[in-house]
Length: 300
Image 1: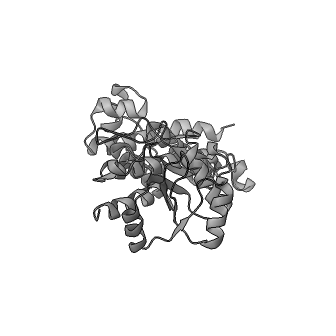
Image 2: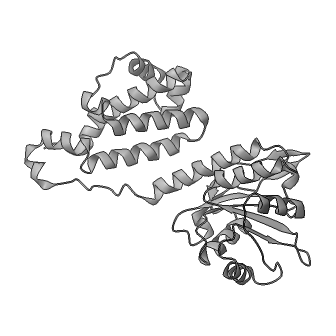
Image 3: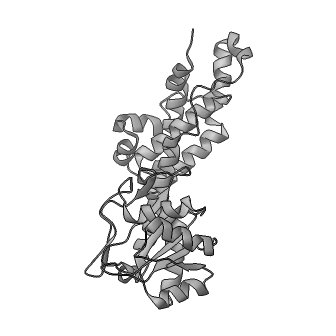
């Protein structure tokens, strides 16, 4: 009796870890850095990099594993992925390989009686966990664009900005990733308090959820201070703008705006009693939203 999990431990992990360690070293990471990223000892990294660990040739040449290693090594090097994100991606790959993939084939070879049992649908590879990791990585990417956008600090309203992106089936703010504490302008410098988390945005996440509720398919948004010239620049760049009433019920006001202009991808309100005027730029994902703002700020 041999469980498929044994193959993961005995065959997949040594092969995968050695491939990833080798790729990370080739990208200039030190053995100590690789050890920290992979959660293993420096001596283990040394063995992996110097070929002192037996590797499964079938998995070594598996395109899905090769693609995974390249993607994770690149993401860990640039910071697009955290070690937790990489773990999620690796876990999903394992489940896919178990489900009628290379690991399922190796399992069938090890236990011939299983060959007629079909695919091994042990875990769901299309899980919320994987999507959540992808959304957080997307917001991090968008934040890097914002950090490198000259003049963004002056677009931050008094209440602060936030860059948000939702899961595909978002219903509440717990399904929306954002910056905890908001993006702030501190003496002309952009300050981002922490890593993207789910459920930490009330205001911008609520606006995004309202647009989704009323038929928008755009899953990301950022809020900036209202400026008529910026609004004009966005429109000149191809944005479709729509105004909503800041003093009315937010969901109803946004619904009314989208009913009149369903293709709107920039919403704005010009303020009210105790309400700061704000522009909300919407997009398919966080990097797309941040890039749109970067493209227009050069004209300001």
